[in-house]
Length: 154
Image (cartoon, rainbow, N blue to C red; front, side, top):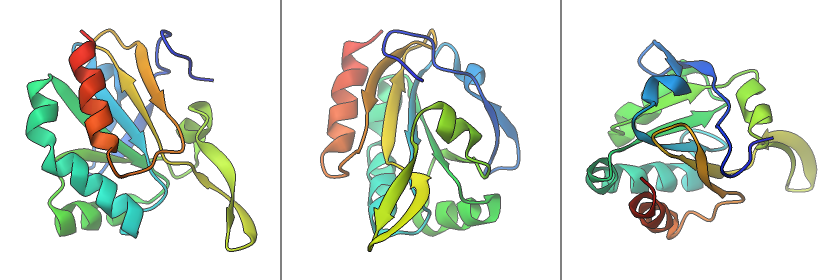
């Protein structure tokens, strides 16, 4: 399980641009690692667009955004193109990384139980240490919370 003030578990996943991406590739930068349920759904679209709309402030804090969902690469590509997202999306189609980060959970949707990603964000410092964990994220105001955290960490 991922813990505050501990090293974030490294992983390698395929990205929307067809490359293998590892968390360790971003050492030296702050990382906003966000897990979301599904491309092109209302809440996930709103969240991605809020990251997009605040990308300058995020980059001014020497940070990058990495989105992770169970969707395949084709879905990610369409989502990025449709909403002009300026960051990579990673495909965790076997839920291995989502499970390791403790965000792959049983969810109750319209009375049916199924496994899926619980919207969560991990803010990781330049050395790969988890500085903040947001679980059961509410989209409204979330990026503002993240920006405050980015300003507080080195």
